[in-house]
Image (cartoon, rainbow, N blue to C red; front, side):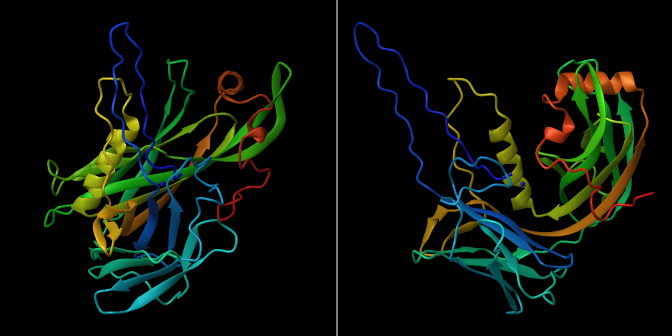
Length: 337
């Protein structure tokens, strides 16, 4: 999930000529932040450990906020464990070191994080639940009238919910598309591959659809900035009821517009806490999920006028090649035909 966690807005009030109103506010201490977990896919598995603070971007962690020197271990309900070692290339990132340790459906997993300052954070065991396959991914081109949003492809998903169990889902997605440069009054002939990530939390409970197909679930939007293919990959997670509630509350707080009449946001309790102080919760969530993945190639071919309008209205000066992580090279792992 870019991992800047829980900002709190402090409002001040003006003074009257009679009496100054003192508005109480809450000061939050620095918290451990957990992101990542175990799945049934081939390892390595990744955990990002940081301290709460002002992160500049999801893929860049300030050195002062990255957790270093931690001992990180995940143990299953059979007593088998795997250690996570810090990445030498990414701040605050820890990866499992045993490629033979693969998450198993039906097994439960617990996290143990020992920090350099002597504190130890643990999670309750989380069962790895089976995930139904993604039956299909498909797209529809959307000519959007709203001038604040570019035209593009809305990607949808179909899957089948199992009838015999209560199920909860979360989806994430990313994609690559060709984006052109802007030269004077026209588009340049130089195009770059630009990655895009779904940032909105996308979850679902089967309370009202148990055993029925999940049809046309929107999972990704890829804007059109050039004539060419769009590469999209969608991941479907089978999550627990507790994880679903966590992500629902997180989405509610991060999407709230906010006014002076809104209540102050309460800390969202995840599933990782201090072993010696159960009231000291880490931020974030240690995820244990069965997953299913599916890829889609969109063979986009739309007229240059529509592309030009999107590029001029929604790209920075210099065009797509000036966007973060833009590359002239086709993404690895995708077909070249």
